Length: 474
Image (cartoon, rainbow, N blue to C red; front, side):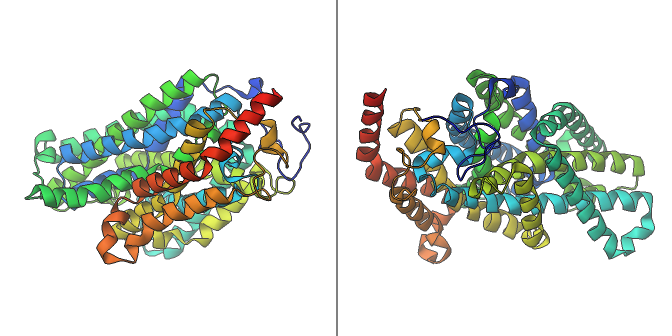
């Protein structure tokens, strides 16, 4: 058995889903550091950090929560990244090993739908940034609602153009933009320090929690939100590590880039939000709204340009690459990476991002924590299958052909489906049973753990037999 010839399209194969060739493995350590800096330095990260201050934490508690959450999510991130770097396969192909050749469409679609929601959110934020710049240049446009929608659709179209140019344009964009984004973010922080009268007034606000119990009641759902923020990337990280020059390149790049970038940019968001309390008398969690409070057009314009570039970076890197591959996996002969990207864009519009970002509560406790309960179980099954059952050994050819060890029952692994349902049920039951609300507060963690345990229990004998047969054949 061997892979189809490149250029062919079958029910399980096309050039976008094929294992990467040595010539395509061009991403070094810097590219992965730049990937995380560019994806971390954007408005939703800023809002995530500032929400901790608005919720009552002091700056030390907020930074600690963010750093802990990202160190936790780094673990499944690196574990799932391994197969991409080793075998050159994308997420929807990798997940065929655990869910089956056809069953892989279920977790792929779960991931894709979440990514479409994020794509819409980021496009909406980008449109808001553009309209804010337009308002700086032409103040009369503030009374023209149609300008916001025109800017939103214009930014959406810009994303589609980058998608059409392919994955290498993403690497190019991130390579030069990461240093620029860091410089502009530090500039914004310096400006806010100046307006607030120094770091002392900015960071002197005490925690609003009077007891340890009150703090923990807020801390754990927020920690889940921190993990949920990158729960999507922890699944589809093979889509990026399949281009790694070596396993070491992606491990070092990610282990440094993710926690450092998130802690750094989150601190900027926390400090600027604290400063807004000093300067304006209230915490302002949106940097776009914050910049609108100043009357220095040049400062506001430059800062909004950096927000725009950051939003474009994260939207393409985090919210287009994966769903494009996921939709392509549904019908490889009909849907290419480009077509999948266009589908993502239109679904992002259909999900009405202006409603997803309507309030702080809907963003944190509805969107972030909610979808983490869907994706945590998928991550648990993937990690359990690849590391604990298969010991990092896959038959790559069999991932693209029917009838092999990943066929299971008609191309679907019913044991994985049972484990997925069990994980999602336990993670989300707290939404409907008030006495079990604490399970929802830990949605990603309980979903990950339950799905992994159930999957290991159901699959251990099945995979052991398949591995033994593979050894005999080899």
